[in-house]
Length: 111
Length: 115
Image (cartoon, rainbow over all chains, first blue to last red; front, side, top):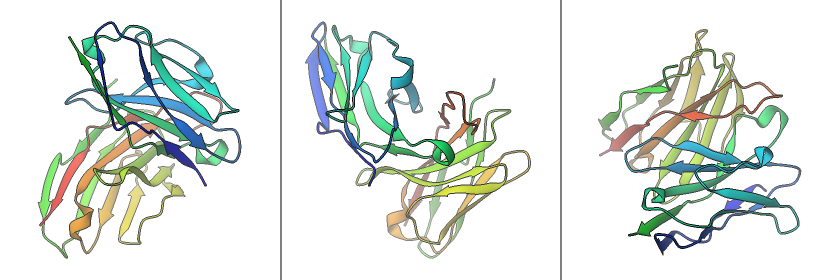
């Protein structure tokens, strides 16, 4: 069965500290993995996806198929990074329109 | 491009009533997906419509239904409302086509409260 697990509900770091938001998944096949972010009073938006292997706002995420993980990392957290982060998974083909979300991690970056 | 819009933004209903929520996708997008967000269950997929056909369905009872019109606008209906249906209902639109990024763009949501 498809499942996305984010073990930390809350995560707090100080400005300038490294941050890592954990995500583990289970899926029979080759999924696509995403990180979505929701800033206060804003709508859910895509942060990054594993297939593009890009860095957005200083965040990166590497898909580790052996450990079935897709952790989100940033070397130096900023106060504006405070938000709710969701890891999500999608299958291929006809299930393109269906995302499986983790429960989310609320990141707070203290000044 | 205008973003995904949802109406109404807030709704208060009583148990037993029914409700219809509306979602207008980004122009050119043919896929609309619906999600229910609650503190207890998080974000859960309800269903997806593509070119007026339901393409995917989540594990929700038959009280939850939807449809999509020829202009890609979508509605979801919940009949015989229960207290547990209180949630934020999000819709997301995308091209729905394979071969591209097919990014889902989310609307602001409709907050449904059932009393």
